[in-house]
Length: 198
Image 1: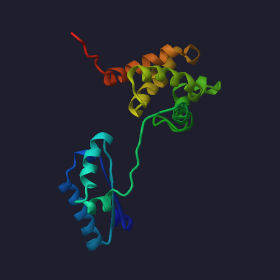
Image 2: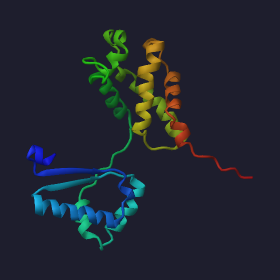
Image 3: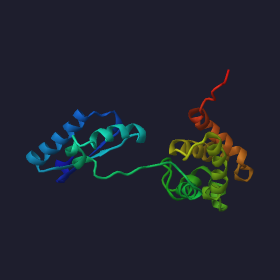
Image 4: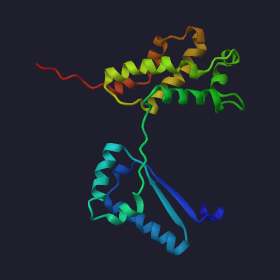
């Protein structure tokens, strides 16, 4: 691809980086060297991994013996997290009101699935306070810090593509969104079993 576009840079994204060993990271360093020396290409490697599990690997890298790996690949760290506030929810819901659905040429997602309500002024963003309030109840009950995007997207898609088209936006209530959250498996995936004291 770099050859076809006459680019001197290559970006390589490695998912599940927490599964890598130091020896495997050394191979990336060798690959960078070969591409630079033989092809005059700059390789940028982006490692993506689970925060807690990746920490173990990073501890091995930063212990002093592997400074070459740290200096070449781990100079910058960006941590992504789930939704943590009402403003996060507002921003995400606004995207449904702005951007086109993959199923149509022109309308945004909200207009695609709720054309009449959209024409009457309904926007998903208007549900932000209610949706955040419902999630907040689950957040407290499950003792979680953030709302993972996987669960937010599933809940919101169910609301937008299934529930609201069936019941209409005027019949929306917190109970409707509670059903969406339950169907997203948030509770079953994150609920911690209670230890019995028999």
